[in-house]
Every structure is written in structure tokens, then in C-alpha cells.
Image (cartoon, rainbow, N blue to C red):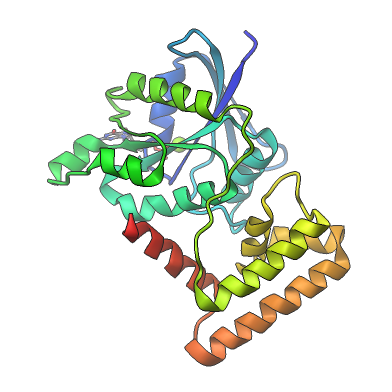
Length: 270
Ligand code: GDP
Ligand code: MG
């Protein structure tokens, strides 16, 4: 079977990703390891409602896409290099706000996203109701309720995903652009422009994303930037140091904390 589409499953640990992956791919899966590390690599193949064959990649569970852990590094490498047609982001519906933190970062990367609001049975037991329609409207892409353990909602999820892929296929990735406030926005804009002009890591990541990662002190992006464009990297690091010093002196905070605050602010506005 020659896969015509690639779909990656992303999500926080324990959101039900593997359960969904197993229910979707059945026995058609292959488990191995990423070269040199202990992170598990799982792939499977399924036939979509339309009959098309799809390659499914189960990404390691992560809370973020910064290279603090092997799992995060693997997840973002796979996204950047394999460039899936869509990412199905599996969320624990009972911990929506925390789970959406990863979603924001997927959107900032630009990959098309569909949300699977999983564990809806648990959420209902807790008395939670979620206006899925409205959330989907706000986000601008499909949000589907699922109970991966029983398979409920999975056929509808596949259908919605396939329809969404049709609207996105062949289109360039469109990274979400959120404001990080009066201190970081001007610096981000300058850094983004310089990164874009130099084409730094351009085949993998949007320029604004690279700038954000540098502000978040992401070691991998820092190391690669220094190797690829030493002068530019030094200049960017100076800008990061300067704004970090300013934030410490005026607000007793630091760029990563401000970035997290604005992401959570964006989430609560949803
Ligand atoms: P992963 O870490 O995201 O791969 O999560 P798993 O697929 O391993 O699931 C974590 C736990 O949640 C397991 O015990 C699953 O059986 C359970 N689980 C998965 N989906 C659901 C669901 O929709 N409802 C409920 N109640 N439990 C679920
Ligand atoms: Mg898992």
C-alpha cells in the first residue's frame, strides 16, 4: 500500500493518544525506536473513509515543543521533517486549558491541526460541558469529541480530518501569530525579520518560531543557529540577553515566563 497522506497524532502524555492510535490502525502498525535514543517510534497504516491509504505516526507525548526532553525534540523533528498533511492533536477534555498549550505551539509551527477532544466520557462524569461547535469556530478548524477507549467518535474524527486535509492540501503552512506583549513583540518582530532574511533553519521552521525558541533559551535551536550563521546568532543572542535583562529589571520576570503567560492568556480568550 502506497500511503497518499501522512497524519501525525500529537498530545500530552495520558491524553489517550496510543489508545486512539491502536483503535484506528488495529494490527497494521510497526513499533521501533528513533535511532540512538529510547523514544518509541510507532507507525501504522489505515484506509480512510474515502478509501485512501494513510500513514499514521504516533508522536511521543509532550507538553511543549521546546527541546527540554528527548520526546519534545523527536516530536518537533518529525513534524518539521515529515511535514504531515495534518496533525490530530488528542486532548484530555477534562484538562482543556493545560492541553491547549501544546495546541498553540503546533499552530505556531504552522502545521494544519484537528482537535480530538478525548475522554469526553470522563468530562461528562465531572459535569463538564464543552461548546465544541463554538471552540471549532473560534479556532477555525475541526474539533471532534471522542472516547478513544470505546472508539466512539473516531469514524467522525477521520471523516472530518480527511475533509479538512482537502481544504489545506498544497497550501503553505500558515503559522498562528499571537501577541507576546509590549516587551517581546518588537524584539520578536526584529528577530523574525533577520531570521527570515538569512533563511535561518528556513526549510524546517517559520522565522517567528525560531525567534520564539531563541527567546525560550532552546538549546538545540541555539546550537544550530550558531553553526549555521554565527554572526547572526551572536546578534540574536544579544537581543535576547537585552530583553531578558530588561524584563528582569522592570518586572522581575524572564522571556519564557512572559511567553507562557501570553499563551495561557490566548487560551483563556478562547
Ligand atoms: P497516551 O499517553 O496519550 O498514549 O495515553 P493512553 O492511550 O496510554 O491512555 C492513557 C489512559 O487513558 C489509559 O488507561 C486509557 O485506557 C485511558 N483512556 C484513553 N482514552 C480514554 C477515553 O476516551 N476515556 C477514558 N475514560 N479513558 C481513556
Ligand atoms: Mg502513548
